[in-house]
Structures are given as structure tokens and as C-alpha cells.
Length: 419
Image (cartoon, rainbow, N blue to C red; front, top):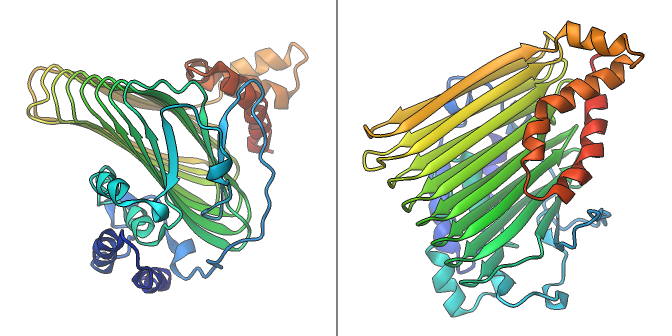
């Protein structure tokens, strides 16, 4: 066991609240866990050496980050700084049918409702998910009533400050036939460690438009996950945009727990020189007539390391499932590294499934063509890179958000240019 994990166990034992039974289970699982090494399949290409002896401040931070507005989007913003909720919930003008609260202030009725969901959607296998179970305290609960359509996007901004360790948790429940849009945005580049996990429960016929913007860079260490449970005829449209940093790992789980559920997942990761990004996705088709369409594209700079593991599991009773997984990667340098592993595990006999992965380099002919037209090498690379991911950006339902992202992605491509 690492020195850092021993500190986690010590701190977790000191927390006492109505979620203590869940915390105790997480602490016991962590105590029984062997610290992952290169021989651990789920961590084979991601070293945790940067975390083993890490010691950072865990108290409240004095940081006052500026929150950039998104042009054209009147979002309901909820700001976390180093795991502490800075937004005063009592001042929010919430639309009818939307409830936002902190679980530490939950009444008895809310506690009963939350107990059946909290730490139940996220699988127990995630090491840093267990850490989050044990240490997260400013837990946010977002509930959308049955038949309620929330037009205003909900944006959850998470900032990590220099020298701090933090743990953030969000639980989202959409009632039957409810509809909402949620944007999760993480940011920070200084020496820090943060975990951020969100669980989503989508009722029957519920619709969720979801975005996770992982904008940690440079020295930041980040472990997170978003975990979805879809009931009958629920619909999920999720887009993930990820930057690389010293160490970044994200797990995505989708459980088709009802018939005719539909999940669309698009993901893009962009790694500058020397950065690391690890994305693991697992789709569990447990019921019949489910549909999953997953497309993941990555661009990897010089000496950067990308890891993708995508698994689709078709259970025995999940007949008539349609599922497709595709991972495409672009190397900007031969010193970059991509480890990709798409998987299909099928136990039903009446399904249509496909998966594939590719790794390629920038075509010199395309680069020469643009440069011969007077376009600089830097601008030509931006054009080619943006073209590689443009299809997935264009598929984002919120085009105002896509428009806001465009200049940031171009700036990111400049950072990724191989000198």
C-alpha cells in the first residue's frame, strides 16, 4: 500500500455522518486493495508513481478563480473550488421542478431517496472512486422532477488550486420523462490532485444531454468518472473533451437497466508534449433492445501517452441489442504513444455489434498541399487536426457550446505542435 493511500484511510476514518456506512465499505475495500502496478491490467499503461508519496494540503483553499461565461448560454453555474461548493444555493433562481441541495443538509426523506442511489451506479472496482466514496463531503444532489423539462443548462465548474488535494461528488436524478442538459467542466494546471465522480440515474423516457470538459493540464493530477444508469427508453447523449496533464484517468460506465434505452457517447482527447490521458469506458447491456453508439478520437503530441480501453458487455438476456464502438487516433510524432483496446463481450445470440481501432499519422501530402497555398505549418496543422475531430464537435446538440470550444481547441492545437 502506498503512503498516500494510508493517509486516505486515516482521513476517511475521521469522517462521521449519515453516509458513514458507505464510507466504511469503501475504506474496507481500499484496505483490501493492492496498489496497482504494471501487472494490474486496468493500470497497465498508467503509472501511479506520481501519487504514491504525494502530500498536499487538504483544507479549504483561499483561491478565487474567475469563471468564464459561455457566450450564448444562460447556464445555471455551480462552482466548486478544491472540492468545496462556493455557490450559495439559497440565492439561485431555480426553475420549477429542479432541486439542488447538499447531502450534508439532507432531511430524513432525502436520505432515504439518496441511499438507494449513492455509490450504487458507480461500480465498486474503481480504485479512486472508492477514495471519493470515503473522502468526498460537499456532495451535491441534483433532482429533476417527473415530466419536467429544464431548458437552462446546468454547469458544474470544478477548479483545482496549486498545492491542494480535493474530492468532489455529484448525484443527479432525472424523474420519468424528465429532460435536462448538464455541463461538467474541470480546470487547473498547477500541482494538485483531485477526484471528481458523478452518478446519473435516468428514469423511464428521461433524456439527458451531457458534457464533460476535462481541462486539467500541466502538473495537475486528476481521477474521475461519470456513471449512468438508463431505465426503460431513457436517452443519453454524452460528449467528453479531455486534455492531458501529468496524470489523468477517467472512467465512464453506462448501464442499460431498461429496455429500448439509447446511449450515444462521443469523446475527444488532445495531448500536448509529455502529457498523459487514460480513458476507460464500459457499456453494460443488461436488457433487450438497447442501442449504443460510441465514437472516440484522440490526437497525441510529442512524447505524450494516450490510453483507451472501451468495453461493451452484452448480457445473456440483452437480445436485439445494437452496439458499435470505434476509436481513431492521430499521432503528431513517432515519439508519442497510443495504447488502445476495444472489446466486445457477447452472451446473447440476436445482436448487431461492431468495434474497431486505428492509429495514423498526419498525411505529409495534405500538409504539403496546405503549405503550398501559403498557409504556415502551424496553421496547417491546426486545420488538419480540427478536421479530424470536427465531425464529433458538429454532433454536439448544443452548438453554442461547440462555438465556445472552437477557439480553445485551436489554442490547444498550438500547444500540441511538434517543434
